[in-house]
Length: 257
Image (cartoon, rainbow, N blue to C red; front, side, top):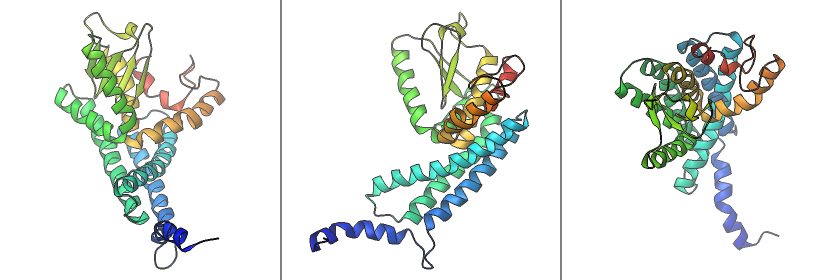
């Protein structure tokens, strides 16, 4: 039974539901999400072209990842904006703001980051890292905190091709999370730097994040990309000797194979 008190408590939620509809009754949020899907897919294609993706399956995965990233980013930004404004903003407003934020950062990540990363300018690399940070706020922020702690303890840190490389233990592998590569110590040169071919490989992954967002990239990587790679007879997160595997690894491996 809805009492006057409970009805008063439900009023803000009912108002928010009303705000999610335009005067004709169409769900505004769904319309914005459809635009986000299309914008994300287009920016994924643009990013793949700007990064000179080598194979058709990787190109297609950029497009799919961009569509996923656009939708998830808009939902994420909508939740953040709602939390900041305590649900005072309408669904239409918050979703539209989220789409603008994602679209602007993704456009810069798709077109500008490849140009910046391919220079030998640390200023250009820093600008690229900032773009990637916007597109990967969670993973990059966590990586930056880890970088600061590691640097204070005298650990190995290198800055190259628009991202940071931090030493995390023995071995010879690296994992890019946002704009930070968690890199095993065997990848570092005696002077504390990482080889440029490795930097270009991991930077390729970070630029994918910049173009389609961290949600778009990592969700696509561990689901569609992983299954696709296994279906090709390769690894879910690598390539085999025949070059088959997760499509997101194919252009990156041209720098290290």
